[in-house]
Length: 230
Figure (cartoon, rainbow, N blue to C red):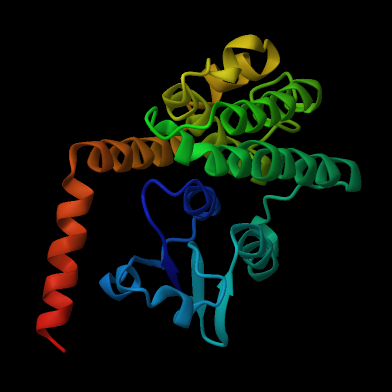
């Protein structure tokens, strides 16, 4: 299998964390230079990462990939052991995906103060706050998001909370985790988990490289090399 992934992509990070936690270590990570040349959509019609390449074809969308991995390795499934636990894992994952990450992504164009539309920023930030409020009510109060062990809820939530802490303040909006009790306690604890720490380090590295221009230089060099081979 091959995973088309990027360090900073939270949707890619949730899949990587699941792979690490499930002990699946024969998956190649790649991000071909051709995808930066407008060819990602010809490979995957949705045109977004992550994409899992398998023998039969491609599996796009992080949540679909997560389900696929659980189906392929049922003995290592991270969905939970009872209908109730599975429902809560899916709920937390949906809150993180839809109400946190999706709204943060839509708000990213508002980071630039010169072109920012305050009404748009405020609307989307309000949706993030709403999602965080729901998460505060549903998240477990132990070491993990749901139940007594690591699940897919944690794999989705860790990258989402990274965005809340590191990206939302770029909108001149307070980190929404700070207004919580249960989420804040969870966030403090889960960062000590070895698999969470690994993806957080990858995301942090990706953010630094984007901010200092390293990512852009690497992409430009890869594109130049790709064109030279055509």
